[in-house]
Length: 211
Ligand SMILES: [Mg+2]
Image (tube, rainbow, N blue to C red; front, top):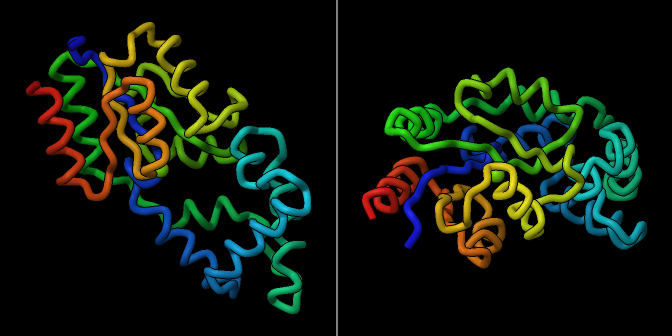
């Protein structure tokens, strides 16, 4: 088994408080029932043949275009056109850094491991998420779906990350709060840790490092 040399972390929901909480707060503010949000995205996907959220995360549409598509899809459910401009600002207004996981990144670096971030994100949100944590101090590289044009769980984004850090899959631990993203990593031979809560994820990373 290859020696583990690197920890690759997701951003939202791992290095931050849960995204689900932020989405609920946003939906509450705009007056959207959570089930309508999912329904609207599904309908927009059926109508256009592509999922607007995936298009946004791959940088193929702008945040403004996403907001338009989502508002149009939500309108029949709400009986009015919702104002979802500044969706990102609302989400980031609710998210907090997850200190326990940020500390884990610092600890493994201190122990001589390398670290990277692999995130499905939005171009227009870059300054928002970078304000939440000292990214350049914590990570030698960031792979952001919106800038590379491919998103997790597509194997190409993991391969791109491994190529960028020049390591084999077996030398890396990958932490993500979405099971499907972990499964894709495992498929490639990366040691995946499915984040459910901070203590559990920290323990699993330490267990892998202890061999
Ligand atoms: Mg996440």
